[in-house]
Image 1 (cartoon, rainbow, N blue to C red):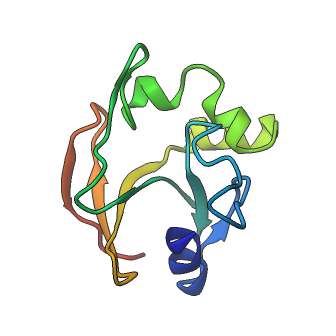
Image 2: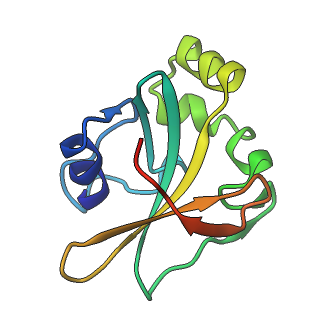
Image 3: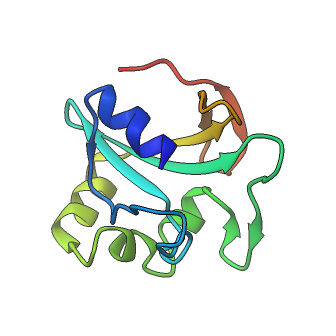
Amino acid sequence: MGTDIHFVEKGYEPLHIRKETLLDGWGETGIDHIFKKNGKYYIVESKFKGYAKLGSTADGPQMSKDWIESSDRLIKALSGNKAIRDEILNFGYSRLLSEVLENGTVILKNIDESGKVGTVFKYQ
């Protein structure tokens, strides 16, 4: 929820199924957040800083290109909207890790196609 609030306050449009409480089925779609701003798409994974890491799956490392684009994860996160899914795949997207600290601070880091976490994200 902290990541949703953070992005919305910065003018990003949420396209994913939004959760209202911690009991609202987090992780059911695999993809936590999808945002759009200025014609660009952002796929974001939220983790509580220091407690959770990106995982390894049968589809590849979490947040890798293979992981995002397999198992209908995009369709599920977008409530079945195939048009937006196709637009995301055709125009490309950025992958981000949102690390939420205990005090609510959000740190964003870029993730490459292989699922490796990299540099701090610079807002658009």
